[in-house]
Amino acid sequence: MGANSPTSPYYPQRARWYSPLFSCWYPLRRWLYLDWLNRIGLGDVGSFVLGLVLPGWSLLWSNRPRWGVILGTTYCVAAPVFVVWRGYTISNLALMTMLSIHAGGILRNEPSTSFSRRCLRSLAAFFCIASLIYAPLIQLMERRWFVALKVNDHVVCVRTGVQRIRVQRGDCIAYQLSDLGLRGGGVVVNGGCTLGKVLGVAGDVLTFTAQKVLVGGQEFAAQPYMPTNGTVTVEAGSWFVWPQMNVNIHGMGNYVVYSTMMRLAKVDEKSYVGTAPEQWLWRRQTLP
Amino acid sequence: MSRFSNLEFSGDAEERSASVPILKDELYYQQEAQTAYESGDFEQALRSYAKVLEYNPQNPAAWAGQVKMLIELGEFREGKLWADKALEQFPHEPELLAAKAVALARLGDIHDAMAFSDAAIEERGDTPYIWLARGDVLLAAKQKQAVSCVEQALVRARDWFVHWLASRIYYYYGKFSLALKMARAGVALDAGHSCLWLQLGYCQMALGLASVAVNSFQEALQLNPQCREAAAASARLSRAGPVRRLFRACRGVFRS
Image (cartoon, rainbow over all chains, first blue to last red; front, side, top):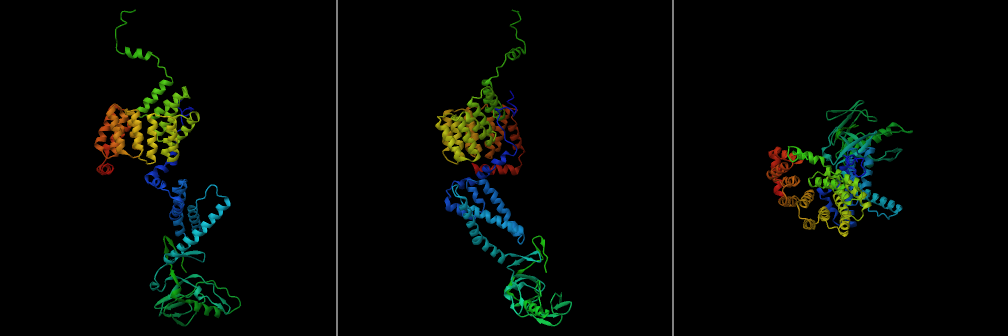
């Protein structure tokens, strides 16, 4: 009759080699005692708090635990991608993924909720999460850890939170140019964060020649629009950093540019953002 | 009549018994399936139940038996699917409902498992398996009433087989002390079953009682020299190094 063969209509379909994958979740959950947590009445407030604290993973305690694993794992992958490749497009994509997962985790849409209401609630949650959690966290990260700057199509990571006192001659620093922005007299300097090499610290006397700048026994190559003679003494509380910028001149003499650049080169220590190391993680950085 | 006809020669009995044709019908395969089940050969039992169904597809016990075998083989998803198929024909069969409850419980669907277990009891199912299934579901739900459900099963049939099944259920849920108690009670009732000794050995091994576990596996091997599981477990225990032995001893202390 052939009951021994799988073709028998009364012989049940047997598990495939991959079948345990479909049911491995429950034993794992029991092993981790997550099923115990599931039976705690989380309620709306509980699930909201859980969604806020454990982005993605909070779905483990819902009726869609597989999505909890998938989204939680995706979030855990996206977070380091966001940090490591900060400044690149993939980092922005990772951030968007994290935001979406986080926002999705705190929402509990009922099946009866209309599509438009779902969209509205999702958008509201997304922007709340972005502005109340992620923006402050990113600001904190940029203030205390590092900030990624795009310089001439290169991403340069600048270590922030380094004490100003440690800045030495030859260091590549990031500083805020907005404080030195000039308007009027036909010169416009677009503000923002920029990078530059410290040529002199407080008290240094810089001697300019056509090919180089001499300071404290050190030599630096001359840069565009730099004076070709004369000396400059760096004032206390400031550094001498020749600004790296694209210069567009329309109908005015170079002397205006020279004088503006010289003013911009005197960088106040207060506008200091951070120091750009030559190597960030495993990446060698292209510094000006 | 030949005058030598009453003389006995060696092999004569076998020849005579071989000449008697064995009627392989539904009952035969049902018995074969039950024997295989009771000896822990779940694959063979599954095949035999399939044979029973080929003779009589309207045999609900065989359908339920197949679902039980799939569960014992750890194929809960397939067990649930097969139970669904069987329940299309026998929607009020208590053992089928109970077996599906077990499959669901072991898949983590406690809510539905409880509903099916309730349904099995409501259908006036009063067999030991229905109460064991209830205990299984309650163990999955981590409820204390599980023990009393297992006791209810034992009240209905105080034989070694129910004790063995109860021990397997407790073992699955990591209740090794209770599993050991059931296996010991089963051995006390009937010590002539290899699978019972094997189960006892597993429980002892889980509790870190390696020395007595070896004896249990040896007993299982004596009763059934073909028992590969007992041979493998015994060999594994004898190969265990000092670190593993220490680990087992520690585990035994914590679990006892």
